[in-house]
Image 1 (tube, helix red, strand yellow):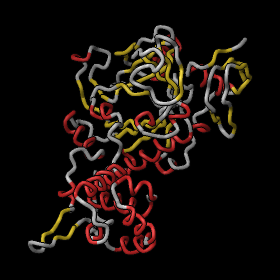
Image 2: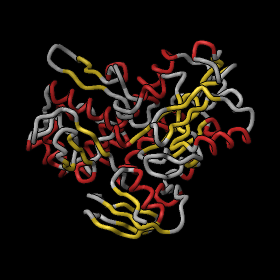
Image 3: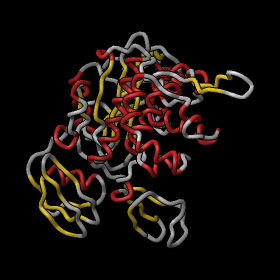
Image 4: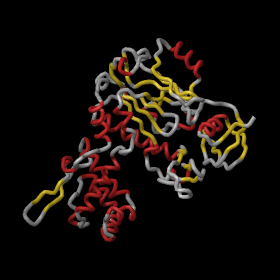
Length: 389
């Protein structure tokens, strides 16, 4: 606590009070009671003088932090529960925000992102993928990884390690580029054409069990061939005949390719051209990489303020909750991050369904209801409800 900077986002003014430092938990709690902030943050960095201006703090190092958020994932549920509002004509619609309002043409549109089980499961899957990268490819120990549900739409993974602490922005960017496969050349991962003579070439590639990106590339291609449906395969460029052959021989492909990747089948049996081959490889890499839209700035910024674990998220009223790595798959944000008891009457506007613990509430449309306090706080914090006395 002594070496971190703290920041507080105030309710009314919506301004950040930062460059705060505390000698102990008691003084920190006194500040919380005095300020009553909506959100509490602390620095990923350690400083000699955390309460001074940035150029006087004396940087000592910084945790490496990954922010994996459903906002950056292309989940289909967003079309049904996310909303946008035109600041000019107040037109409100569900789905992704367009470039301009279709009603008045105004380009200032406010987004209202929702959270649901599907969003958070997608974020959880990316976290599991990230943990695999860090353990297998970087040798990070489980005790150096500290995972927290953000209280909204994702997870924060903190790497607290003396070996990583002094990495600069460029070195942290290298880690990010690796996990999102930025600039990855498949030829450098053992995938290439081997010319046997002037007329004949075979495709050579990595195996499922190979370490690093070689194995990941192979597993991505294997997933496409053994799991994708007819429409998905044809969108990649496979002909109707090749697609039917893959689907009809799927069980054999699963068995044979799990023992050895038969890369030359792409040319010998399915007759794909260079453009289709490129599509397949790019899609395979995207399946096993972290999405390129993850908040890479959080990881590379060595002075970043991040939400403090154990505090409430001002956008939902849910707690930023510590999650044991071995418990991640079973972790339920809508049960284990609830802190409010009791009930509250609220007036709710146009609102998607929300689940709290084992109960579902809504959808609501311009109605007054009495709901558990955790639901009321979430809807009020999201700006879609007001309390009723």
